[in-house]
Length: 84
Image (cartoon, rainbow, N blue to C red; front, side, top):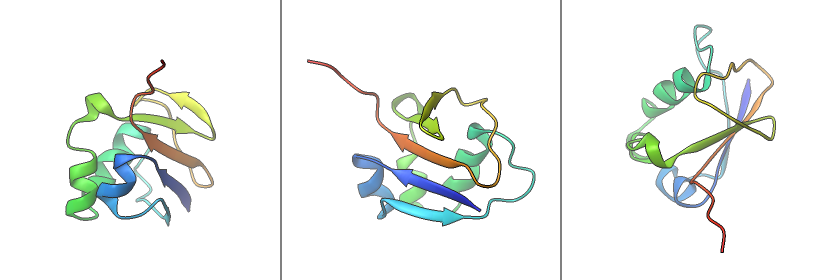
């Protein structure tokens, strides 16, 4: 199982701020997880439609799409952060 967190407009599009999922065993990295999450419904597909505006963290560490994921991880998705 993996805990998935959604922030800002990703939360709105998916309709949830948090879910626990069990992705297929072949999901090995963040990019693969995103591809699988897109299949969970139209809200998830919309949330991940433009990956240029989606960032990820695994276990509270910002990561690239090729970062590995495994059972027990907490994966968060959020828009790019802006400072002011």
